[in-house]
Every structure is written in structure tokens, then in C-alpha cells.
Image (tube, rainbow, N blue to C red):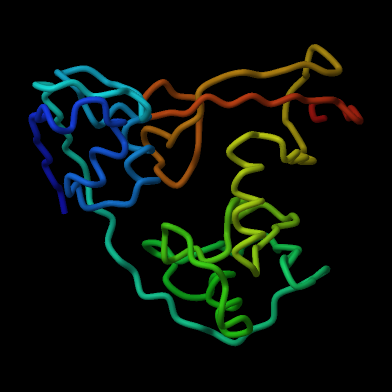
Length: 224
């Protein structure tokens, strides 16, 4: 369902951060979703994209048109997941290929969160009710370690590390083609593929900046 939000900033609200203003003015979505919409250029101030921390002024015209995400039921399902480490604060899971992290359209059941809810009744809540304890994700076709928070303290700490980009994430991948340099850095905007919405791609439409440092470990003809 599409929602249109329009407001003219009053004198009383002048000086408030844009993201805070939107939440308290009844835009109807979480602050994290608001920040995402702002960064995607969906929310306009006087007809132009802005930033979450912009201090609004009296008379500013705020406009947004966006899709409201459907609320999906999150059902506990008792099936095994490979836990390789656990303490009072975190769970480390070796997520297998083919498993989706949290419920979404087309994957309401059989996700990692469905399994975790059957085993852990009190995972800390996040702004997205379909992702309790989750602060980072792995794609469906990616195998790897996923850290899930069991406590509020861990949720705050992990979230801060992701926000400040102090957590290192290392991926091993097989790449088709001849890579010119043995190591380097790729900096390009990443967003949903314009045609296949289940894939990510380099795009300048509704994208986020991404930096990847790579190093070639082995070369095998046309692959590395």
C-alpha cells in the first residue's frame, strides 16, 4: 500500500532533526525506516533530497511517497540450526546456503528467525519485529557466520559496531574473469537490481555507498 506524507514545519518544531520530526509527526514507520527513506531520496524537503540530521526550518515543506511494508507474522518453528558458539550475550550461527535470515514476502516460514524463536523466547527486539536480535545479515545463497544478540547489551554493542563500521566482515568468493590486480579497493553504490529485485547490483538509483577491499588468493585461468 502506498502512503503520501505532507507537512509544513511549524515555528515550534524549527531546529529539530529531520528524522526525529518525521517520527513524532506521525509518518507511521520506525526511525530506522525513516533514515533509510531519507538516504534513498524518497523524503523531500522543499522539493529536494535531504539528510537525516538536517535541522528543519519553519515553513519547510516535507513530502514523501512510499510503500508501507506489510506486517508479516513471525512464527516459531522448531528445526535445527548450526550453532557454533553461545554465551549469555550472543549466538554465533554457521548459516547454510539457501536459508533466509528473517521472514519477508515469499519467505514467511523456514527462516533462521523462525527457528531461533522456538529455541530462544526472549531475543531483544529491534525496530523491525521480524528481526529480533539481528543486526547484520547474509544473503540467502551465502554460507557464513552470523552473530545474533541474546541480550540488550549485546544488541546495543553490535549495532554500534555496525553503525560505526568497526566490525570487520570477510568474505571468500569465486569470481569469474581475469582480475587485473592482486589486491585493491572497489567503491561503488549498491542497490536493488533494476530488473531482478531479488538481486543487488551497482546502481545509482536508491543505492547506498559501499567499499570493498579485495585480495586475490588463487588464480585458475578464467576464475579467481
